[in-house]
Image 1 (cartoon, rainbow, N blue to C red):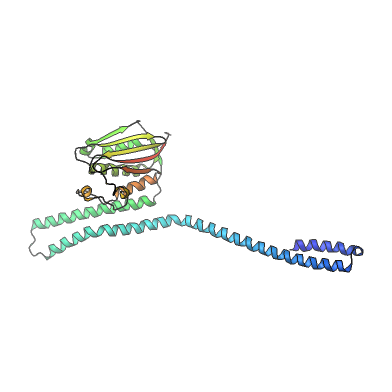
Image 2 (image 1 turned 90 degrees about the vertical axis):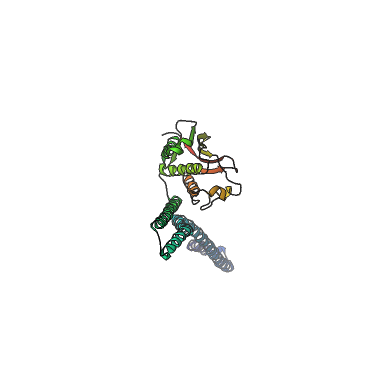
Length: 304
């Protein structure tokens, strides 16, 4: 506004210096014109500044919101994992605790409890304690996998799969058939978590297959990915169960989970989390009473 006013004043001075060329009416009209232009300029500038400030506030507000969301996302994710852990633990701990409580109450009410009966009671309670310990470990691993950042290094997938196979007991090792297209295939990964992933998948394949049947593991390269395919015979997975197989605590039909070591339905959820942390994918191909295959795919890299 000062700049505009200064220019008008300079022009008015020139007019006054050449007053002979202009009449009094011209000078009055010029002053009115200058006043009107100053008012219009002031109004336009105020409106422009108002819109500019509103724009700055909107952009700054949105930018602050997205930056705050980005900063709080790890905290929110950790909080969700903690809440989920608490909910899942309370859901699954009820049954074994109720069993232990009822057995102990019955034992305390009994006036004549033999040594053999006491031994059976303690063995039953120990079994429930072991189940609770296993459940707690699985839930902690699942929660940790959801919020952890893994240290990735180049790994030989074939060597890692061989190591997992060798860690199985002798009866299980005899049933496993390993097929590879190359002596070594490399990917970026975390050895401990990938080992846990392969243990989960191979244990499931051994558990849900006939005792003397083979479990086949095929490590192959497909384009720019390295894939690990674990296949087993057995009851298979029905079309109704297949979409939910990676949901935590999901267990399929009774014919498949009636075995003593039916698990908690957490293993495949953990396997999926580990795969996603490695920017990979996992899927299951299965039909009832046919071969079931779990295919895990990861980005292949050259050896460094």
